[in-house]
Image (cartoon, rainbow, N blue to C red; front, side, top):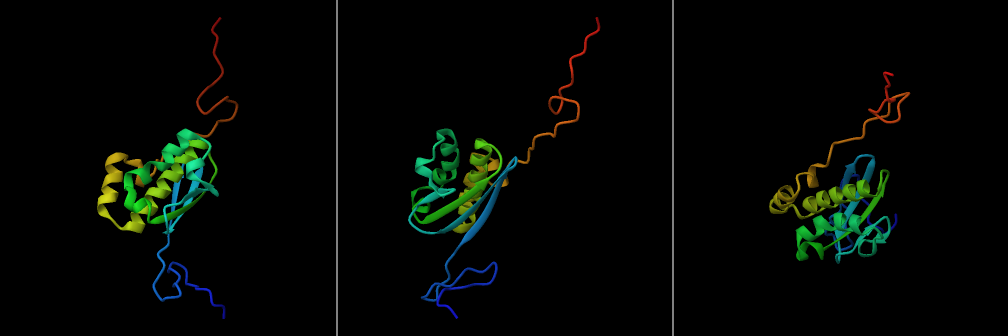
Length: 153
Protein backbone atom coordinates (compact mmCIF):
# COMPACT_ATOMS: atom_id res chain seq x y z
CA UNK A 1 0.00 0.00 0.00
CA UNK A 2 1.26 3.50 -0.82
CA UNK A 3 2.25 6.05 1.80
CA UNK A 4 -0.17 8.67 0.40
CA UNK A 5 -3.25 9.49 2.44
CA UNK A 6 -6.40 8.10 0.86
CA UNK A 7 -10.00 8.49 1.90
CA UNK A 8 -13.51 7.29 1.22
CA UNK A 9 -15.84 9.42 -0.83
CA UNK A 10 -17.10 12.39 1.19
CA UNK A 11 -14.50 12.08 3.95
CA UNK A 12 -11.35 14.22 4.13
CA UNK A 13 -7.99 12.53 3.67
CA UNK A 14 -5.88 12.20 6.80
CA UNK A 15 -2.59 14.10 6.99
CA UNK A 16 0.50 12.16 8.07
CA UNK A 17 0.15 13.50 11.65
CA UNK A 18 -3.32 11.97 11.94
CA UNK A 19 -5.29 15.23 11.84
CA UNK A 20 -7.98 15.45 9.15
CA UNK A 21 -7.39 17.86 6.28
CA UNK A 22 -10.53 19.93 5.71
CA UNK A 23 -11.46 20.14 2.05
CA UNK A 24 -14.70 21.71 0.82
CA UNK A 25 -16.01 21.32 -2.73
CA UNK A 26 -18.86 23.58 -3.83
CA UNK A 27 -20.65 24.28 -7.12
CA UNK A 28 -22.03 27.54 -8.47
CA UNK A 29 -24.22 27.94 -11.55
CA UNK A 30 -25.42 30.86 -13.65
CA UNK A 31 -27.24 30.40 -16.96
CA UNK A 32 -25.17 27.64 -18.63
CA UNK A 33 -21.93 28.34 -16.74
CA UNK A 34 -20.87 25.86 -14.05
CA UNK A 35 -18.07 26.59 -11.55
CA UNK A 36 -16.56 24.07 -9.13
CA UNK A 37 -14.56 25.48 -6.22
CA UNK A 38 -12.20 23.47 -4.01
CA UNK A 39 -11.43 25.26 -0.72
CA UNK A 40 -8.44 24.01 1.30
CA UNK A 41 -6.38 25.46 4.16
CA UNK A 42 -3.61 27.61 2.75
CA UNK A 43 -2.15 31.07 2.41
CA UNK A 44 -4.82 33.02 0.52
CA UNK A 45 -4.20 32.08 -3.11
CA UNK A 46 -7.12 31.87 -5.56
CA UNK A 47 -6.94 30.39 -9.06
CA UNK A 48 -9.60 30.50 -11.78
CA UNK A 49 -8.91 27.80 -14.41
CA UNK A 50 -5.23 27.89 -13.43
CA UNK A 51 -4.94 31.71 -13.61
CA UNK A 52 -4.34 33.65 -10.36
CA UNK A 53 -7.37 35.86 -9.70
CA UNK A 54 -5.14 38.95 -9.34
CA UNK A 55 -4.14 38.79 -13.02
CA UNK A 56 -7.45 37.59 -14.46
CA UNK A 57 -7.71 39.41 -17.82
CA UNK A 58 -11.31 40.73 -17.67
CA UNK A 59 -11.42 43.44 -15.02
CA UNK A 60 -15.18 43.63 -14.46
CA UNK A 61 -15.40 39.85 -14.11
CA UNK A 62 -12.44 39.89 -11.69
CA UNK A 63 -14.20 42.38 -9.40
CA UNK A 64 -17.37 40.26 -9.50
CA UNK A 65 -15.39 37.12 -8.54
CA UNK A 66 -13.54 38.87 -5.71
CA UNK A 67 -16.70 40.16 -3.95
CA UNK A 68 -17.09 37.16 -1.57
CA UNK A 69 -13.37 37.28 -0.73
CA UNK A 70 -13.43 40.99 0.08
CA UNK A 71 -16.59 40.65 2.18
CA UNK A 72 -15.15 37.71 4.14
CA UNK A 73 -12.27 39.80 5.45
CA UNK A 74 -8.50 39.53 5.65
CA UNK A 75 -8.38 36.79 8.30
CA UNK A 76 -10.51 34.29 6.38
CA UNK A 77 -9.09 35.27 2.98
CA UNK A 78 -5.48 34.61 4.05
CA UNK A 79 -6.21 31.23 5.64
CA UNK A 80 -7.59 29.36 2.59
CA UNK A 81 -6.54 28.40 -0.94
CA UNK A 82 -9.29 28.21 -3.56
CA UNK A 83 -9.03 26.48 -6.93
CA UNK A 84 -11.97 27.05 -9.28
CA UNK A 85 -12.68 25.40 -12.61
CA UNK A 86 -15.41 27.01 -14.68
CA UNK A 87 -16.87 26.12 -18.06
CA UNK A 88 -19.82 27.04 -20.27
CA UNK A 89 -21.68 30.29 -20.66
CA UNK A 90 -20.28 33.73 -21.32
CA UNK A 91 -17.73 35.83 -19.45
CA UNK A 92 -20.08 37.40 -16.90
CA UNK A 93 -22.11 34.21 -16.40
CA UNK A 94 -18.83 32.45 -15.58
CA UNK A 95 -17.86 35.26 -13.20
CA UNK A 96 -21.17 35.01 -11.34
CA UNK A 97 -20.93 31.20 -11.19
CA UNK A 98 -17.43 31.55 -9.67
CA UNK A 99 -18.77 34.14 -7.21
CA UNK A 100 -21.49 31.75 -6.03
CA UNK A 101 -19.08 28.79 -5.76
CA UNK A 102 -16.52 30.79 -3.73
CA UNK A 103 -19.18 32.22 -1.39
CA UNK A 104 -20.71 28.80 -0.76
CA UNK A 105 -17.29 27.22 -0.27
CA UNK A 106 -16.15 29.85 2.23
CA UNK A 107 -19.34 29.66 4.30
CA UNK A 108 -19.11 25.87 4.47
CA UNK A 109 -15.36 25.92 5.22
CA UNK A 110 -15.60 28.53 7.99
CA UNK A 111 -19.01 27.31 9.28
CA UNK A 112 -19.89 30.84 10.36
CA UNK A 113 -23.50 31.98 10.52
CA UNK A 114 -22.31 35.62 10.59
CA UNK A 115 -20.55 35.24 7.21
CA UNK A 116 -23.63 33.57 5.74
CA UNK A 117 -25.83 36.42 6.96
CA UNK A 118 -23.37 39.01 5.60
CA UNK A 119 -23.52 37.42 2.13
CA UNK A 120 -27.34 37.31 2.24
CA UNK A 121 -27.56 40.99 3.20
CA UNK A 122 -25.10 42.04 0.49
CA UNK A 123 -26.72 40.10 -2.33
CA UNK A 124 -29.47 37.53 -2.08
CA UNK A 125 -28.07 35.60 -5.06
CA UNK A 126 -24.58 35.18 -3.60
CA UNK A 127 -25.46 31.91 -1.85
CA UNK A 128 -28.67 30.83 -3.55
CA UNK A 129 -27.70 31.48 -7.16
CA UNK A 130 -29.79 33.08 -9.88
CA UNK A 131 -32.35 30.65 -11.35
CA UNK A 132 -33.11 32.67 -14.51
CA UNK A 133 -32.34 30.96 -17.82
CA UNK A 134 -32.54 32.16 -21.42
CA UNK A 135 -35.66 31.13 -23.27
CA UNK A 136 -35.07 28.71 -26.16
CA UNK A 137 -35.49 29.96 -29.71
CA UNK A 138 -38.69 28.86 -31.49
CA UNK A 139 -38.67 27.56 -35.05
CA UNK A 140 -39.15 30.04 -37.92
CA UNK A 141 -38.29 32.94 -35.65
CA UNK A 142 -35.21 35.13 -35.25
CA UNK A 143 -35.17 34.80 -31.46
CA UNK A 144 -37.32 33.42 -28.65
CA UNK A 145 -40.15 35.96 -28.98
CA UNK A 146 -39.53 37.96 -32.17
CA UNK A 147 -41.65 37.18 -35.21
CA UNK A 148 -41.52 38.59 -38.73
CA UNK A 149 -42.80 42.12 -39.12
CA UNK A 150 -46.40 42.33 -40.25
CA UNK A 151 -47.57 44.69 -42.99
CA UNK A 152 -51.24 45.51 -43.65
CA UNK A 153 -50.77 47.47 -46.90
